[in-house]
Image (cartoon, rainbow, N blue to C red; front, side, top):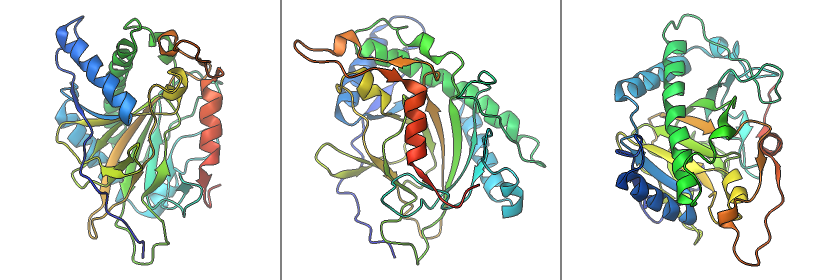
Length: 318
């Protein structure tokens, strides 16, 4: 059985209110950017509330996710993620921490259409016999991408750059959406086996909707782990590895993990990986370069993400 050490502290992740920030310059926008600055310099994790996504749509999304994962294994495995297609990954198909056993989770991915032939383009697959599944996922995908785009603008403002500084980077980007189910950990789980092993995300920002069961944890600068407890009506947002590169280390991408501590309950979450298009060049932002500091080397966004994804072991997958 996994020897699990309970995090020392409950969530201290800041809450950022987006109300009043969408419709032009305002004191609310200035305040949100200031709070972002602190959150991004501390752990790179924060909640957003009053984001504008209808709770009825979020509820429908979780209902569709549960219905999908409740299908027989044979129905899900017809949609296995392989080659040039998004799709399903069964339990223990991935190890986000290559030094730990495979992650005890299953998932299903879709993404934006992108440009056919682009290295970043993947086709979507859809289950049969679930008439509302595609409509609900695509509707939520559009809405949460709108929120992620706005948060990206607030990040630009927090860096004393123009509000629209990053806008052009998100044309024709894939923006993967991932449904996740974390079953209760089995009694014969391997040592150090978690729902998702400790890792940082590969890209720009990640927007997470989580159910009420909890299990998401983040490592602080002191090396302690704290809970990122569910807050009704919120999304959890965390920075990926591209952000420290763009900000010359000013902003952080922190290790995080998932462990389902509920012995008889499944945990569900839905994750949007919001990234620049494949060809985007990541290079130090001028306002993040102090006197005498050397900028980090520039690189291609998509190449970095592909390298990181390949390093996350996939187990027994075609």
